[in-house]
Image 1 (cartoon, helix red, strand yellow):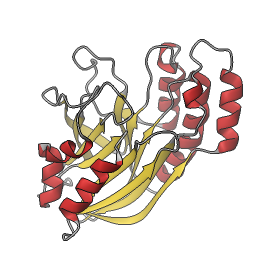
Image 2 (cartoon, rainbow, N blue to C red; image 1 turned 120 degrees about the horizontal axis):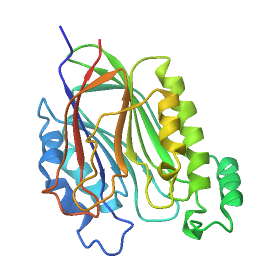
Image 3 (spheres, rainbow, N blue to C red; image 1 turned 90 degrees about the vertical axis):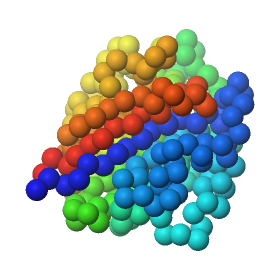
Image 4 (tube, rainbow, N blue to C red; image 1 turned 180 degrees about the vertical axis):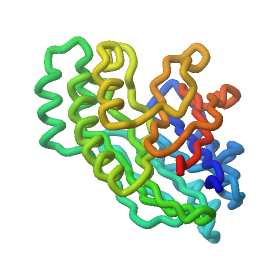
Length: 255
């Protein structure tokens, strides 16, 4: 009997974009957040990027007297935003960590990017990723989830992706893997020359999301996986609180 499907949502909530005026605490009222807060059995795993402190506080206050959720939050060291990985009570957390990408690798990426058309001095600070190893209480199956937000500068992104894919490859040896996040693969970025997408194939990750980009936007938000099959996928086009649409995918462990 196949394990029950798992919903996974990735969403950049744009605390780092001054044009977005949505109060960060307002995101907690969205239906897929509320499923987690209420402890519903089909609540999704949610990977957030650019989640501001007010949003994190609102979620903590809404769930502090329950056992409905586990969090892994790491704040950016150059803005108010951070990465937040939200796991509903269906899943037991076996291991959890968050870290910034290596300063050594970051410096190499910055040095290579100096003078390039896509260089942006705001990208000098390392970004970060979270990793949680989970056991599904319904099936007993174990898998690992990563959440990240890569730089949009080619050479810096290369260094971050290399470091991340080493960790993803380690996790793959222990079981299925999900990597979600804002991978920033548009404009001047590696998807145009095949660097990032080719390396995703090399590490054995498959896109679980819709093939076409979301309405009037480029597709830079992804749910990628190894050891899962895709059942249903969509952009939540009715959610217009950010400069990104949430991507919601229903996936199933392959065996």
